[in-house]
Image (cartoon, rainbow, N blue to C red; front, side, top):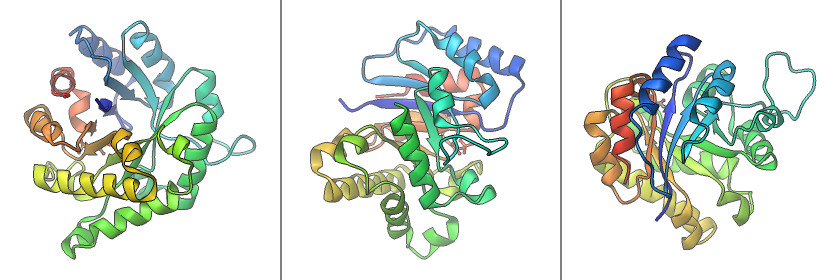
Amino acid sequence: MRQQIAAANWKMNLTYQQGEQLLDGILNENIELANHQLAVFAVPFPYLTLATQKVSGRKNYLASAQNCSDQKSGAYTGEVAAEMLKSINIRYCVLGHSERREYFSERNQSLAQRVALCLENGITPIFCCGETLSIREVGAQEGYVETQLMESLFHFSEEDIRKMVIAYEPIWAIGTGKTASVGQAQEMHAHIRNLFAKKYNKATANHIPILYGGSVKAANAKELFHSPDVDGGLVGGASLNATEFSSIIRALK
Ligand code: 13P
């Protein structure tokens, strides 16, 4: 079975102490993950070593960064390089989140460089894509997401592309309480998988986990994850509550 992933995206929330308490709360549930299941915590940079220590020895629990620089190293004050993440044993990194695209002007080209740097450093990118409400209202979402994937990912080799995790996050569903319907999520996930099949091949497309993000919570996770092409979720608000996120982990196929 394809990898199924419950990924928490804390964004810029929680103090160190609150983060520690949250991780303890979730880990104390002792939810055992099957070989194909992963629980990933995308925490702020200063908490990466804490998260790594907390999950160490827990099968298939991992810490993740929320971003990395599009430069290898050098005079880029305030940036964090993929190589630095590797040096503290981080193996996952969220890239191209819509908030990064919107507030920090990250473009498809720069994201392609970040993906390359992650791959060079053995880090799995959790690559985010997704359309705004105005794009969905005119029915242009499939083409929009295709362009995002084409410009950031589709020049990578099949071997590299197989290391990728995709997160489809319709911007209109992020933090709004409006979840895409199961039908809308499944339709876009199938479209994304089909794009990978056309560009690479069916086996590769079937190998890549595609997560859904946008107002995932305990109450809707099971139904969303039940869809054949939805391989888990990238979760914002509900990942900040131990009970909620534990239920979301339990909802994985
Ligand atoms: P919410 O779950 O708060 O809607 O956020 C989704 C998201 O942006 C995860 O990356």
